[in-house]
Image 1 (cartoon, rainbow, N blue to C red):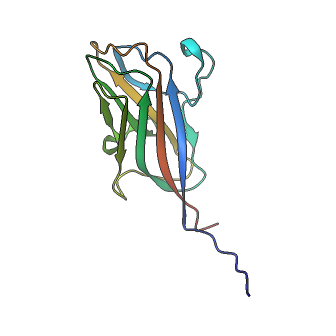
Image 2 (image 1 turned 45 degrees about the horizontal axis):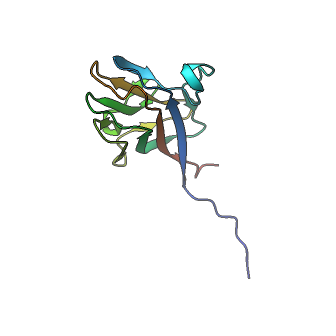
Amino acid sequence: MQVERVIAKGQLIQLTFMQDAVAASQTDVQLPIAEVNAAAGNAVDGYVMPFDGEIVGLSAVTTAAATTGTLTAGATVGGTEKTATTVTFTTQTSRRVTVPRGTAAFVAGDIIGAEITSGGTWDGTSADLGVSVWVLLYIDGI
């Protein structure tokens, strides 16, 4: 039996972002990578990518459903939202989207983040939010 060192051409990675008690009337707010009660603690709002790659999905969950208003969440590259990654909450507690390959590419050194916008009538203000951005890192050159 011969053992070969083989590496995959890509690696699927989950990047996590969150916000405690999602307030109404937020516009393009970058989410921190970790948060404690009452938005205290962490100002880090992105991950620096060590390799080229692309965003291939986004999933989000809230701890409680709203009854009115909307909340959108989307992945960002360098602070700019990639519209193909956006999900919208109304009365749901979970949302997800898969992104067609080649739609949301990034290069090594780019910062991947997540941002939200909540309408003025969003009443899910007791809900906490978790967002996962799914990226495919191209590691075939290492």
